[in-house]
Length: 468
Image (cartoon, rainbow, N blue to C red; front, side, top):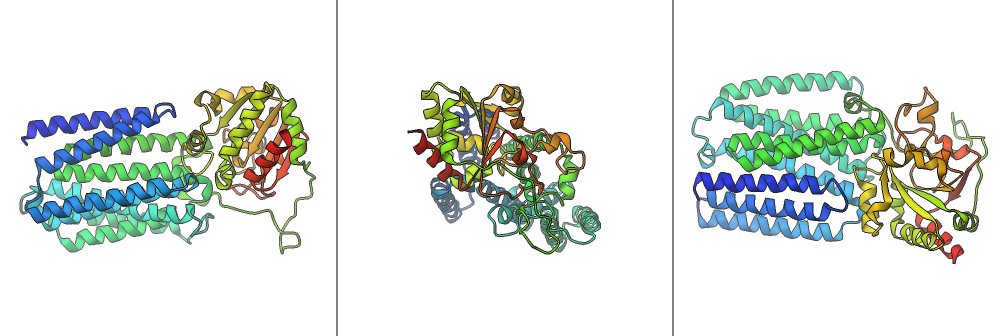
């Protein structure tokens, strides 16, 4: 295959990737977007195999075996993964991309002629190689830590090391010096020094970040993985890698900005870490604990069913509690019953609800909730004042009025859903514990709020039975 045809096919795959991103921006077109991305990747892989074929039949066999094994594992995992575990899966994907960047850079360094780099390797290629490897290494270990936090294998609370900012700055300076040295010498020892420092930096950047900032972390690591691919793409003069990496890197950066805006947080404050973590309500009598003494109004599923059946306008606010309980299907069934009784049912989605961007949208789509019933914060906030019932199911920080009223609150200034403006609020939650931000939700204590304690799925199913 000649270079012109390869460039044309790489450009076609790039256009398909752009279309894929456009399609993924809406639940209605996400399936087409996914298909476009798959076709684009298939074109890129086949083009690479024909344009730069393996040196021998054995090498080709290894490549085919790698594609088969990886494809089989990916297919199996995609078919068996629970939707609640999707953030963890995404974190692992980012880790694999980062590790691949490091390994490709190491391969190019060890066999430059096989990658058409010449010997000795040009200084410009060494810079690109070192940047790709460094960003890839940070992405790998950072994504592994994110996976462990999301999967509950590591505490979701910030892990704050003493002098962590000074340590990170020192490692950043050391990394910069190693990259300069490597671009001048191409020394293999210096390359692995870059990788080791970057691996350590990835861990230290993510461990101090609490659960409240996980949506930003996911999109940030997505961006890192893209830029790692760009660096390696320039090293290998591979147009597909450059285009794909740039798309992923820029879209991830934009998404990180959107997530930070949704939490009223600066990107630097997220990277600095130390905000948010899973906390429970203080145990009565615990040393140093200040027990909450304000009363809350507690209701039963039967009372909730009666209130919902009488409502003409209902807004459902899903959160991570719904995801954990796998309550999305029961929730849709409840909404269907309400619509049969003449109620207007809408879903309000906060941009940082759940543990990754679009988490709630994915779960509602899985439950076949109509797309035209799902609204973003800016589109629906004014409707709460006209709602008879706001049904909050597992959404905590994103409904906390303290974000608007308490300047001392850690979440003050964060855009939240105006749930408290509804005539009645039904709040489904396991207990009185705080959300990821570690702050108590003032909505619990509002006179129009009724708490429905218990597993979200069981509570909704009980309401459904009571409505029959």
